[in-house]
Length: 232
Image 1 (cartoon, rainbow, N blue to C red):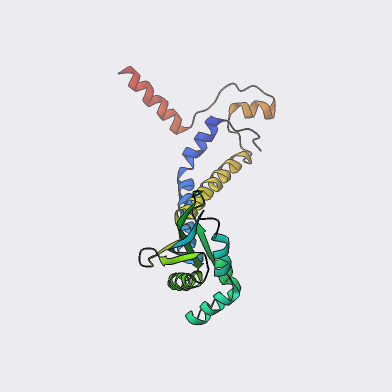
Image 2 (cartoon, rainbow, N blue to C red):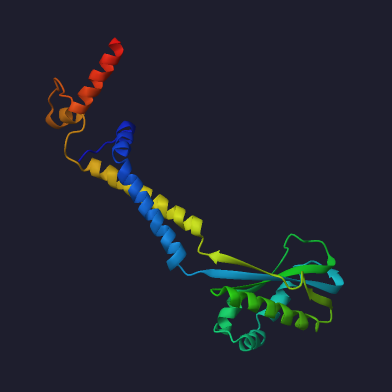
């Protein structure tokens, strides 16, 4: 086993094994791409917004918890599950729905915007559920004494995004893993190779001086070509 490897040896190893390293990296990158696009489960998030006007001025975060509690109530979501014929359980719906507000909004006002988000693995179902819950929640909010009005922002427009998997990130990670594995294979193959790589290896192993080295045909030809270029 060669216990040492210097920077020059490492660059030489990479140069001699560059094809193997590139193939491994490309293969692992392809695996990551395939897994992320065709194997991993896709999840989505549909978001719609509403504008709530209250009779008294307050921050947007002061009522958010109350609105979220109304949204996540078993009765409210059970009715949504029934009306939309959802296959998702009520308990799962509780985890998939949420309300967000602008946490940086610390100024008191009577009008605030809230965003209602629904997650899941069916894009169209997420969109329909978000629109339905937004419409129903507005009606529930109007029953509160302090709420003056609750309406959809932008005609109940819904934005839909894919939350997972992250194609580029997964593909990049697999490519890096392939690169690192190929480098480790090359380095360990070199370290566990018992053949002599340098004249110093012979000196250390046999405790004898090296009187001369016989160059390979390729290295001798390179030296000869360099000498001829110098004579011109």
